[in-house]
Image 1 (cartoon, rainbow, N blue to C red):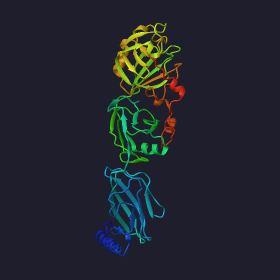
Image 2: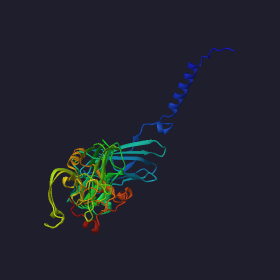
Image 3: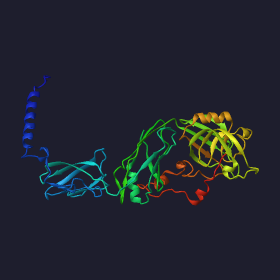
Image 4: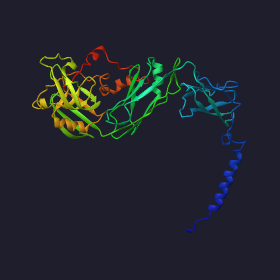
Length: 420
């Protein structure tokens, strides 16, 4: 048997080229229409943009594109403004109409790219541009993001404060959809309406350590409601530090501090005695104050009573606005690790308080377990956001739930001052 290969390459290539050329000829203007260059679809479509003496479109009205040719159809539409913000829309099943499903921005420049096809399937293209006008008598809704730019702990929620109340669920959905939070690494998160003028954003779990978080608003120029339009908002950039979580076991009189999931310290503490029990649950460090003067009168204790006090307090790490701190309590060192004798704060020796003060930052997590106290308020006394389950948190979103978690009368009554 001969092993000499047959000389077939040149002949095969020649036949292949002839076949491809023949196919290309057949796919010209008289062949397959899909290979033809897109035609100008200007005569095939109509849209409700400005025409004639009307120079700008009304941002109050949705954008609509329809087919003028009964034998043609719209296959795709993309619309975006000069900032790259896309407009969501819906195309009818028969391809005769596309309309925007979210508001246009006022005083913006739009580019719309329309794809069509005729009765033979040949593709058409048309690019439309137009400007929207400024609405008359408008009121703007401004957004202020918080906290200020910087590095925070992994428990820090994002806040968005509005200068005007938004009550209508549909208007809330417009606002919420325009508030964007992106993180690297990416995490699942959601906004929650605290009340008519404030939203909080948190992930399902704590933020990753050493993450970068960018917050921005796409609300500028967007119609929210009758004569209410979105204003501009300053974007915000945050980073997170190490994952620092301090867990205080009130029954064991001990605080264990974890950094990136490794235990780095265990500290003897005292927490609130009966009648002044420390709040259970997750709190977030709000501030660090080297010196605070604490008085019993500030939490409703009558001067001169057996519970009265007036003390200089050092290395005070605040976890509620009503006055709960983790701080130095040299007067109770004998009880630390053995008994709860404070008026609600977590007390420790001066050296331990200084260590804690130096190793935590705003946004770090302080969790109390096994106390006889109530659970930390969700809102209004600091950041108790993490005490809601993820399902209940999403219930407070206008996009996934719609029910704000506003404090009840009983919860508001429990916002009592608490310290020492």
